[in-house]
Length: 509
Image (cartoon, rainbow, N blue to C red; front, side, top):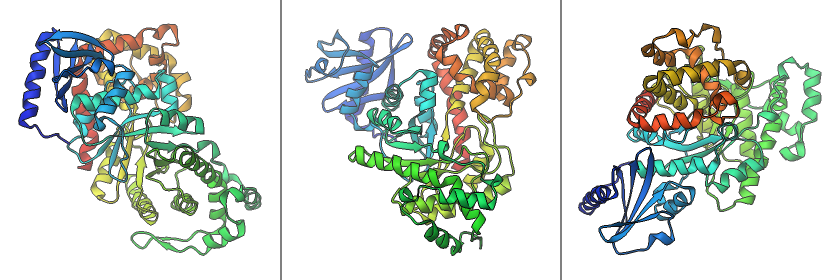
């Protein structure tokens, strides 16, 4: 969404340009010029650092609110403020558009930004698409691996929308939350979307259990917490005959019901517990809830989706989105592997189930670079969707490194190759590091092409924590060098990101 450029705003931009010349050798981000009453706020870049400039036309003393250096410029009150956490908090107080909001059931795109500098490019890519950006998105695992805080991720989103002058509203996703402590961490930082990860409560072995074993496990479920009688639930589901789309009839048998409940019964309970914790502990906090059941061994069947959704609905849990485990393979950083016709057929039925319970969004996790899937979903023009990406922005940062400093890219790639066997353990990927050529055997102009190779992309993707944390002697200093190089090549980096995410978003338009 573009803010209207009024005559007064044109004068403010003119004033910001004038003030910038007095400050010194700085570059003005013109989209960042904002009025606050009679006062003007804007951002500049000086060397490799960005600053917030606060200009009080009427002599307002912002030095009591913002921390920064007072400048003798135009004989007025001018502050040059670092992009600190405290200053970000004050910006959110002064400008409501810099706070995360509820996105609801609009189409939305999650932009995981592991480095904290991709936000402006993400906004440029999304702003004319009709999708709402989930700009602050980070899982607990990502926070731990990158050694960032939830507050730092939120602050990066705030500065991004301020710099770009984006007034369309952005969401914030505390991703893969497993415990109430995880929720506390995200609420304190101002997050509004909470993605519940119940993977610890999934029984993935149900297909190997005999009917007798399934019946025994079914009886052991926490029925008091499910607020239901085992026999009543069984009868209700045996009587189910639900027509979805194109004449498809959902009518489960006893074994399918037993498998579904044994697999997901405790998932329902855990999700209810987490939802109740948010409602009871933070009754005034704006909240929307996503459930992620995508990290299972087998795809989520249509009945399993219905079962989870109907039981949560019965228990009063309202979802804004749900991420099933779709057919095929959604590996990190590469396109979908599987039968697209099967995906389409099942996707429309998943949409029909979502429609039975309020029309929540279907969420596509590990959504980075799933271009063939985007084409399918975009061509359907049915329901609403949420796509979640993360590692692909990091890979575009490395593409920039390969183009701007090939030798540094070789260092990162060789280090990532050494870390691959260890770092891949928490991922479902198919990369074979032996298929990647020796980086030293390639010319400089060939290195960036590796970012289009599936094996290389996945090797680089899974090693991001080892590269960015600096915990190992070989990677010490990598992050500082990486951030400085990206700042030095800001235009190249952002051009790579915009191009890449326009490719992500265009199939939906």
